[in-house]
Image 1 (tube, rainbow, N blue to C red):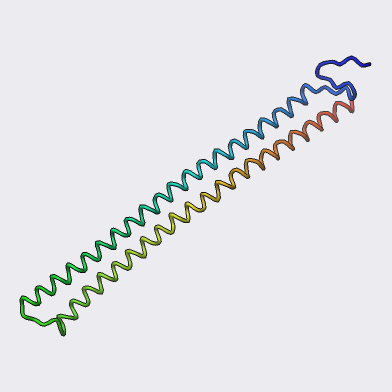
Image 2 (image 1 turned 135 degrees about the horizontal axis):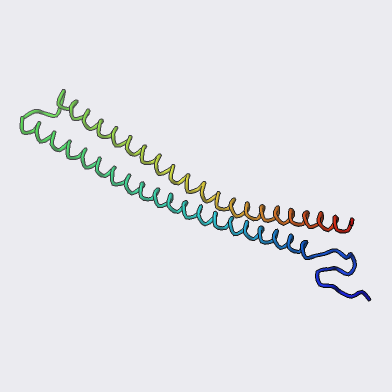
Length: 167
């Protein structure tokens, strides 16, 4: 029976000390890659939550802006009606045209503000969605890199073992 020597396999007589270190280093690189993938994923999820919060804040801001436009339009119509009534002018003809034009301008401004706000909300939501997708891809990328590192370590080990056997 062969005597077992630490660091050597009794059948192949290959020194496993350096080869074992190669495999261990590839394992450490793999674990590091997986950890990095999870860290990137956590960062992406956090950034996605910021964009989601921003979208919600913009939606609230949009509702407030719409309310302000509605109130301003009502105040303008009331003032114009009161001024015309105090002057004894009936709300017809050019007086009605002025009121209608003012109301139309407020409604146009209101629609533009709503559109711009909706675009901002949609942009923030899209950014959040993209970051959530990136978060899942970051984890997959970490595992993929870990697998590649492990294969690279195994091939280095195989090449090292082959070179030793060839001596």
